[in-house]
Amino acid sequence: MEIKRAEFVTSMASYGDFPGRGLTQIAVAGKSNVGKSSLINRLCNRRGLARTSATPGKTRLINVFLLNDAFHLIDLPGYGYAKVDKQEKARWGDMMQAYFEQAHELVRVLTLVDIRHEPTRDDIQMNTFLRQSGIPFTVVATKADKISRGARQKQLAPICRALLVQPWEVICFSSEDGSGREQLLDVMEKALGE
Ligand SMILES: Nc1nc2c(ncn2[C@@H]2O[C@H](COP(=O)(O)OP(=O)(O)OP(=O)(O)O)[C@@H](O)[C@H]2O)c(=O)[nH]1
Ligand SMILES: [Mg+2]
Image 1: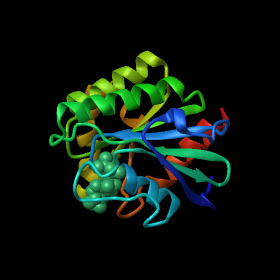
Image 2: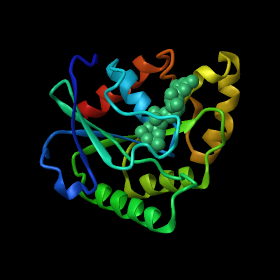
Image 3: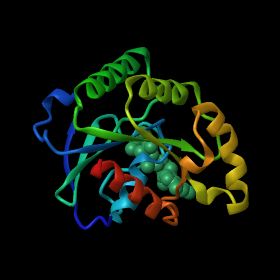
Image 4: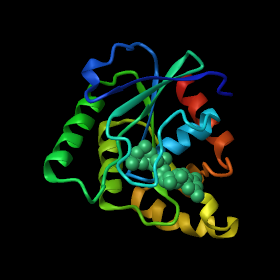
């Protein structure tokens, strides 16, 4: 699959507002600052498509992109951002719960973790939730450019242990140099075709 067209559709605080139902969806989830928006930009080869920031907590709404006029790519708000208060956390939880309950068009979630770090409690919780809900997911280890090629496999071990996946199921990805992009596009194409 190649991404020939990509456009921003809308930002929303609640999925109930989304008019563009009917098209298949793939969502991108992961903790704040893990590189969700950067991954979307790299996939589409469009720098400013999704807003990125060195400050965590940039994407606080559900952002929807239309790719190839064929499917929606959903940039979900990041979790685990330390500086949010209880109220903000509750709002996030409600937003996500409503999204997963209502997104019947969702075929796969790309769950992002930083290749350099062990998954957090929030990562594991998200992973457990997706498993229990029967929502297919693919683990993507981001920022792969930050460590050497040789170190990548070793870094995957604790990630795989925590998220109960096999190393070959994980995609090592870099928004910086584009590694893992083809592999990810293959996974997406397959998900969309199923
Ligand atoms: N070196 C490197 N930096 C990355 C990569 N992906 C993201 N970054 C950087 O990490 C920071 C956060 O990236 P974002 O894409 O905004 O992260 P996000 O997951 O969308 O964050 P929120 O919107 O806050 O949830 C930015 O400074 C990016 O430039 C990567 O693959 N390699
Ligand atoms: Mg973001």
